[in-house]
Image (cartoon, rainbow, N blue to C red; front, side):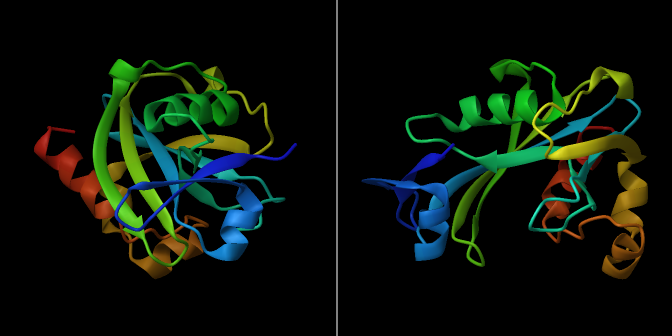
Length: 174
């Protein structure tokens, strides 16, 4: 099934154009993306193992979930949908804490990153759409101490932008 997305300029302004996601990527069009990470009261981040079938970083551990914003969909709506599709749990808009908005020049994505405080056990998560194959918790301070090399050795996607999340968690007593 084709996924259609709204196209934006690099300043987050909608252009009015709607394209199929793969076509937008092929043409290098700016599009909206979301990322949602879960943190529990013990300061552990939920990492999700990407399906071995994924084109980017197959089989690696990644932040909880993420994806593209569909045509006509809000960023918050997309975050809620992605969590439901990839992790099989329902969250509310009120649970989403916006951490940052960033421009990813390397893939022309305008990304909004969220955090959800939750104490769900691992068995509460189900993997309906096949994008995620497992989940685990890791103390955020342990992840923050890892070098890029150590992350790769542990099959963790080494995002440089974890810093904004670590800063929020540190300032908020996690």
